Length: 140
Image 1 (cartoon, rainbow, N blue to C red):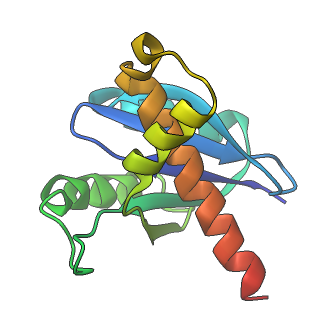
Image 2 (cartoon, rainbow, N blue to C red):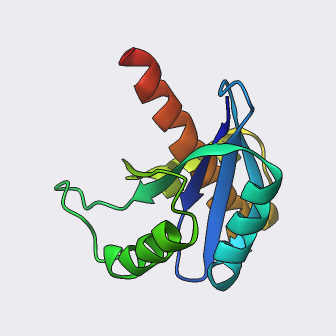
């Protein structure tokens, strides 16, 4: 069984998280610059079996796709061309950044560390993947 990889895609940085091989837990990987993401994904998938990539779907409070989709759509097309053997699924990412910030506060992370956007992006990717895994466990 291969891993599931999740991406919190941003114009500058992308948070990345991956499951363990048994798909029980999500762990953050290093945050990657958006311009380097495809190379990172190719390298990672050449070393690890990845069965699915989950990309955060940005939505407004009304549930409509947010304007962030304008730069995620080209990435998704590029991803399907570069890694056609790995299915890609979008998953609702509403509030993940706010939840990530709140979890860092609850975890006792100092304010100076919380201001590091890379940590917030990585945490948001872990939340997306954890929520994705939880949604699938209830649908079995």
